[in-house]
Every structure is written in structure tokens, then in C-alpha cells.
Image 1 (cartoon, rainbow, N blue to C red):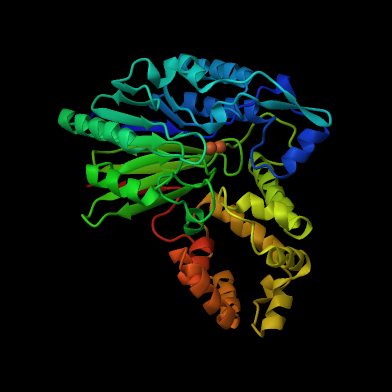
Image 2 (cartoon, rainbow, N blue to C red):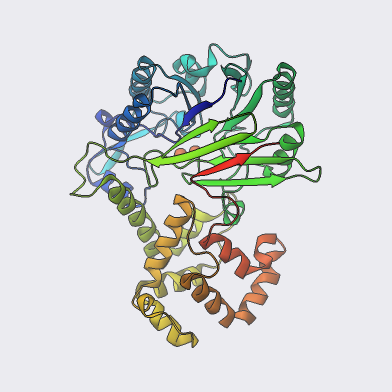
Length: 455
Ligand SMILES: [Fe+2]
Ligand SMILES: [Fe+2]
């Protein structure tokens, strides 16, 4: 490998062709619970591609899926025009496709309703994106659409498609794993460094993500350990629209790192630059979209993304009180029953007016004066945003962490019962304070800027 070797990674670009229809009351309703800035995607992607083009040193760009909004043929054609511009400025682009890239029945927004538009079959994606990895690869798996490509001298990319059966299974079945093992062995035999990209995270981005539906590949633990023991050390993922870096180490002592990147078109609107300074040192730097051409009501790009993200969470919290069934359906694993509706409604209602000061008085906890006026709801919104932006700040020793831990202590008897009841199914919940602590403050390596050492 010629070092340093660098590439850019962006993901979940979710491009939407606005001429299909992206305005009106139905679009406004859709936006209330949406992280992605949909009508803005063209502008945001143009801005990102300008940034990538300006860096003349880096020639490689990886995009692991959800290239467009939801399968509209016109969105693919528009997105490919943008990729062509990126190619024209000297970049080689490698994509994998994902669930939102094919759909028989996509819809655009018109007035009060959603109108059908031309869709894209999964097969068509290979032709559409033939110039972006598939046509000049070293190996292509026809059944799964995974491929292996030599992306620089001595550097091999395993672009793994994790669509699975397109329904409940997202990941790699036995036959697929056998093919992946062959690619790993072939890269090793050639003496290449190799890493993978796939759409779904291979490791949960946070402990809570192993409990909610659709947040990680199927059979994640078994698959991650198998891949690590075969020698895969690094995988780049997307899908969750969040920044996180996690690892797993197997009983044999092999470590696999999962670098999950947030969506380009919603908070945190992230661009990763990855540099192998040698075969073992991998530097990961993250930046954000700084500006894009849109009427943002006087806000900066960052303020606009934050406003959009927080509105999504606020609307969701409001729906806990107003429509607990819909809220429970949204977070439940596919096929499981919605439970605890009364508790969801109570929590949703309480969060609307309760301040931290009032909560402290109720629980006999001293609350720092600068936190007294903060609404529990606002803190909740911030905690969720922090989780998606990565490097969540409320680690042990910070006032917010202490306050939350003290509050949990007051509910010790209830929490002990919950730990016993819930911990059987989800081991993470057998220690609820530790679980909450892991949600509000980052542990392990940083999520945005870091250097990994491989074996
Ligand atoms: Fe996505
Ligand atoms: Fe996705």
C-alpha cells in the first residue's frame, strides 16, 4: 500500500428529485417527524461534493447505501448526474445500494396527498450504478450484489450488500458469509490491506440499538465475531443516521471496529475522511456541511439541521401523550406487540411541563441552579440529538449525569423489579443505571475524530 491512503465516506444521501413533488401540506406533515431535509437534498449534496472536489489529494469516495429517498427512478437519475460531476473532478466512487434504493411503489408529495411515481427494481440498480464499483471489481456476487474491488494499490474494499431477504433478515446468510470468507482470504493472499463497507451497522451504535427494531444486521453478534476471527478488522456502515464507533473483541482476541456515519442530509450532516497513515494506523476525521444554498430563515446550516432534528424528536415526544399506540409501533421490533401504552402516555404527558427543578423537589434532590429551569422534555430532546451526533457529553462527573443517576436511585425498588423483568430478555437492562449512563455519555473511543490501531 502506498501510504498515506485516504478516502472520503458519506452515506444515506437520500437524494430526492424535487420536480416529482416536495411541497404542500402533506409534505409539511411528513417533515414534522423527519430527520432528513428532503427538498434540500440536492443543495446539500452539491455543497458536500464541492467540499470533496476541493480536496485534490483524496481520490476515493465511498457511499454505503440509501443513495436516494425511496426508490424513485427520477431521483436515481438526478443523483447519478451529481456523481458524474464528482467523477469529472477526479474522484473514483464506490457505492453499495440499500433498502431505500429500490421500491415498486414510491410516492412524491402533492398538495394533501402522496402521488405514485415511477419506481426502481433492485435489478435495475446494477445497471444504474455500474460505473460506481460494480463494473470493474475483482469479484461480484450475483445473488447478493456484494463485490470486492481494488480501490488503490494494495487496498481492497469489500462492498457488502446486506439487503438480505428484503423483509426481516438484513445481513449475511451462510452462503454469503462463505463468499465473504473467500474475499478475505484472497485479499490476505495478495498481501492487501482490506476493510468492508455495508449499509446496516454490524455492531449496535449504542446499547439501546440492540433492542430497537431495524438498527443493526440480523445475527449481529455471531456475524461480527465470525468476521473478526476471519481477519476483518474494520467496517464502515450507515443506515442509523448516527455517528458512532464501536468494537467487539472475540474470545480468540480478534477485534472488529464498526465506524457508523450519520446521514449527509440531516443532523449531523457528516463527512468522514479516513486516512491509513500506515497499515495499522487509521485516522478518522469528521466534518459537517457548513453551508448550503437554501432559505434557512437566517439560520446557519448547523442551526438549521439542529432545528430540524429537534423538531422531529419534539413531535415524537408529543405523540407519546397524544397517540401512544403509534409511538409504540414505531419503536417496537417488527412482529412484536406494542406494550406499556399507559406508561408511555404518562411519560409523554409528564415531560411536557416538568422542569428539572420541580423534579428535584419531588425527589428531594438538589438541582444546580442553571439546570432548574430546564424542561425534562428539552433535556430529553438534547440527549437524543447528542446520541446521533456522537461523543455524547454527559459522562460521569458532569452535573447532568449526577442528577440523572440520583433520580434513578430514588426509584431503586421499581428499577430493581424492572432490571429482573427486562434483564432476562435484554442483558443490557439488567443494570439500568449503567444502561442509562451509556446513553447519555460516550464511553470507549470518540465517535467523530480518532485514530484506530489495527492488529
Ligand atoms: Fe437512511
Ligand atoms: Fe437504511
